[in-house]
Length: 121
Image 1 (cartoon, rainbow, N blue to C red):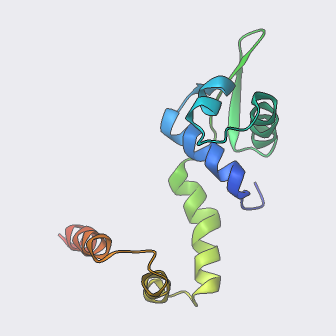
Image 2: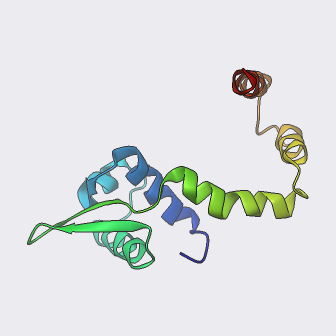
């Protein structure tokens, strides 16, 4: 696990994190439209396993996949350093950027403040 995943790979991992254990057909069903072909999903999941992001259980003619890394560990290892590099290690700069781009609402900012306040207690 050396590199951050592509957008499509992250999408598949999001589904795997949500489902915890899943067959390829389960992941494909959870994908947004237009859905990738089942063979494409299968290939991507096999590659994610080869990269160490998914574990495989062999059921003879089919495989069940489960995350080999937690979402929190992935975020800490790959996303946090990316954001740190882009925003000079400043969460304030990152949030300001998304607020200026209208990617975050006032209600979402309030939720973030509530999380911070809860953490302090």
